[in-house]
Image (spheres, rainbow, N blue to C red):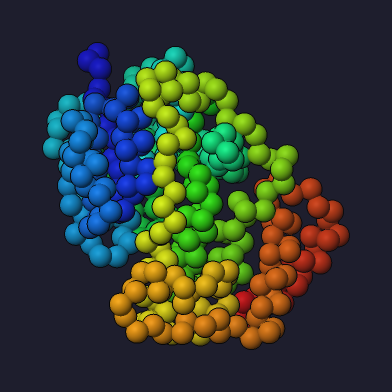
Amino acid sequence: MRRPLIFCLTPVRNEAWILELFLKCVSVWADCIIIADQGSTDGSREIAQKFPKVTLIDNPSHELREAERQQLLLKEARRTEDRKVLLALDADEFLTANFLTSPEWESIISAPLGTVIRLERPEIQTNASELSFFCGPWDFPVGFVDDGSEHKGQTIHSFRIPVPPGCPILAPTEIKLMHYSLFDGDRFRSRIRWYQCFEYLTSNKKPIELYRYYNWPLFLPPTAIKPVPKEWVNGYEERGINMSSANRDGSYRWDREVLRYFEQYGTAKFRRLAVWDVNWRQISSAFYPEEALQSFADPRTPAEKLVHRWLKRTQPYWSPDSRAGRGRKFVHRCIQRALRAVGW
């Protein structure tokens, strides 16, 4: 049987901090790389255009609509009628380099039509250029041996590829998907501030639910964090790719978007969200130095600040690796239910 083409499908919006590293790694294994750019202004488009395997398309949406961008990427990939394996990755996600030697890679390439590939996604962070990781309690459907199945996504936290009912599942255990989520800790915090605001405006989720969902990686015990195995990166490093070469520029698009929410809705609407760990007036001054500044002062009451301190102190009890006693967990869960009952 003829070897299928391997496609990488990636949405991009101002990912210059890591995009060059990502495309160097993807170019090792992909035949075709499709980048759907959503109005990047940081040089992402110019970076993408330097790589010969990249097809650059435009995502014209001004808002986060994951289903639409997934459809754009799928439609472009399906212009090619050849047999295809689709891997849908974000720009901060990297196949572990052991795909070069693992028999699991051949299993992926030779899987039957309609197979969904699920990969474990270790979260990567760095300390003094040394990569370490921790594992979340889940894996992700990121690959699909394309059979033309319809894809129906949703606005946020959507499956990236078709997952037909009853489809065969392939779940490798050696090859993983390294997620550089905490490579830049400030970027991660900026991102989860925006996610909390966005979901608070677009869903029925309450502040406590959003806090617990997004903040748990910041409160893991040291025992949960381990050095990245050499086989995850050596195959790239041997090709001259420095796996610690992403940039930290200290300016994050999510902060700008949170400021727009503040301008549109007022800060008081977001007072119960955990977004007040930074000086918003200072951030606004950096983004808009020529404009008259709003105060963007912290709108929280003393009681709301107390709840946020309690959330931070008790977050380790919601960690996947928590070893806290049942009694304390029970007490904190009772307090949390009471807070949710009054709008938290």
